[in-house]
Image (cartoon, rainbow, N blue to C red; front, side, top):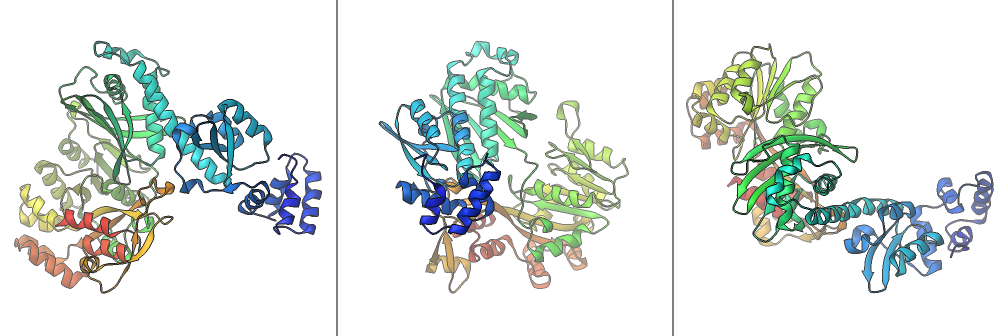
Length: 555
């Protein structure tokens, strides 16, 4: 194998000519540390796929795509990670005495022999491009590391009466390493939440990626106590309190990755359940220059944002990206000559040029008290992380009508329902009318995976739902690139209402919500979330299943 002349192989199969081979050999003489294959790539005579194809033909090997195959983590674990990274290879399947390995350089005899000696198995070779191998190593060895660390921690777990001793363990303790592996692996997957759930005979670890929750590990119950205790320590919570819910927040660094997370712990029948929510600082947003909005919605929203004062609410359920949207707006506005202050619980991301304050209930710093203090700080723009009670709503509204631009979030089904919600909080209709500047409702829908989606003709029921006569839709099939979900990534859909003079009068007069909605449709070109989601389905960005999720929530 090692003596096969790669130049002659490429020439034989028509990928290079004699002149190119001669040039490459001359170049190699001047750069003796480089192999001829690398020289061919550097000079641009062939690409990686062509070289692998030629080698596969000569050596009677098969090409594969690591994105398209299921990788057995048990097989992965048979090759140490340092060896896999050194030789750019990964084991994908193990059967009896044979181990299937995907690599980039089948002429590296020493690599193949090392792996044969380590695994004590016959090696079957498949070929793939280097990027795919690197990505597979990163992803799958992370999963292997989590399983191994959790297994090790389970065998060394503290018994219940020794739980406080977790506070005294060092960073090398099995439970610490187990949680670190779990955090870094889940974070690298783009998970939004980690659920650690105790049951009678087991403990489940599940992660939510792109809105869908999947099981990651099934652990011994014995690990539950020490793992929860470690989470409490990181979050500065009471390690001895197991009867009451606790909320916390932590920042840590694992493998040079900064992790910022919010923690919620509740007591259950079989012990405490913990949910860790990652607060990402580097979220990639579609149409970021328009705050993730389509052009028509952005123009309306920008009109409201440019107002010198008033109240702007972003509404939606938990996890719909409301805070991310607010941060994008504040980040843009921080470049202006204005004083921006926030009160949040917690501060999810530090914004340059913005004065951010975090709620501290133990010290008595509530949204209400913090907001009152902010009003004495000469602010131009205020952001209230969430309007949770009547007192906060009242102060926010009064701040808006006294010359401040105020942003906040509410939990409502749609944009116009925010009017009813404020009334229910005891805010007089005339104050609601005079303070409101804009309302935005937001949802997240999953984007269909472009690598495995299948196009099909919509049936009669689907056409009826979409209000279309004919349509070609996308069906999610699932591949390794999308973890076999059929979806990869999410994007926001919005509905936007800008409050004009006529609308203020209608709000003040407590006109029925249905009449308000008719007015914004007839006079403002209002498009609701249903319609926005439908457009994404018809354009092949998402699926009818995702549309139905939005429709059910909005009905």
